[in-house]
Length: 468
Image 1 (spheres, rainbow, N blue to C red):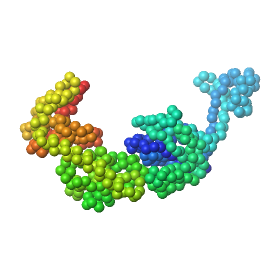
Image 2 (image 1 turned 90 degrees about the vertical axis):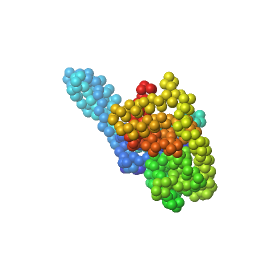
Image 3 (image 1 turned 180 degrees about the vertical axis):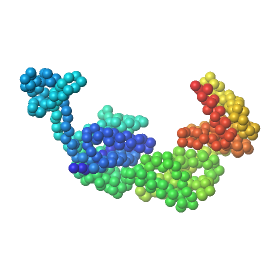
Image 4 (image 1 turned 180 degrees about the horizontal axis):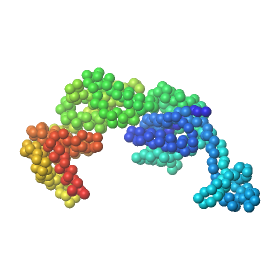
């Protein structure tokens, strides 16, 4: 016979970035564990939210198959006398394996002839072997950080609050961190964590969705994309939907409900990258842009739960965004009081690395490097001139207020390019400054301009030689 298996670990909120790796590990560990105990099964699927890690195994055998095992006994010379009669050694071996002495077989091995016994071991019910499989799978999960709670020594990503273990209609007698499995799951916090009694695994997804919990992260991703597009369209725009941010938001909540927020239009004078960083990087909100690609004074956020009190949620989100944009507005106003060129001398006060001088010294090295590289690759004079000028100004944004704010520090280079443009530098110079750190990751694109490629290459050569 076969039945579906449901295993749910209910926890306090897990960091969004830790959920998906844990689900992948859980699937692999369960597949390996079920294979180890010889339980046939169908697909092993995992689901996760910030408050639960779930595995569903379809068509799991409810009983192990009988297994024939072969055991090696004493040498044939010790098991039988000269007349071929079994000795006490043969009888003892047969008794220990529960077979008749007449059933023993003699086989030749590389060490001579030995006695062997074939034993048919009956399989055990799945309910007897599953607890060990599930507990070993939980013990095998790894997280960036773990914690202990209560009086025990068990470590996990967050405290375990409930466990569900069902094989068909039967409860699997497994425990996690001292919490015994049952058939009671929990609904959304907004609903007061209502208990949800499950008769079979087939009820799980439907009953939880009735209680504001969308267990399937793929469905939550689709809900987020669809709702963000509808909310942005109501403001005459479209959301900036990046897969990484959609994934992160999907693992931050159990029931996504969109909120369209607004900020003062005066903030659109800020560099677009700053607005996007505040919305996406700080708050995990989706920026809204018009059909021409320019930002609009709106954003789409998501709350975890239903429609109750949504207007208060919207005001709260706007209340958080505006002060951050006001900070950036202040930084911009103060930074632009001083042209980027005038900040070159300020680099003399910032140490690049012990024994390797200041940022000013690094800048001077970059100027010489880009000129040398440009000559070696036979770049035209205009490209070399643009790259040299970009090198002179490349690190000036590191001494601005905007980049000094650690929450905006990742915009270095981008802010330098924006300030250079507002200081009257040539577009090619500004673009090279923006591209100096590209690619920032394996998925990032390479510098697109000749001057940008020269500066980016020179910067990495200097770092490699200086640091290693």
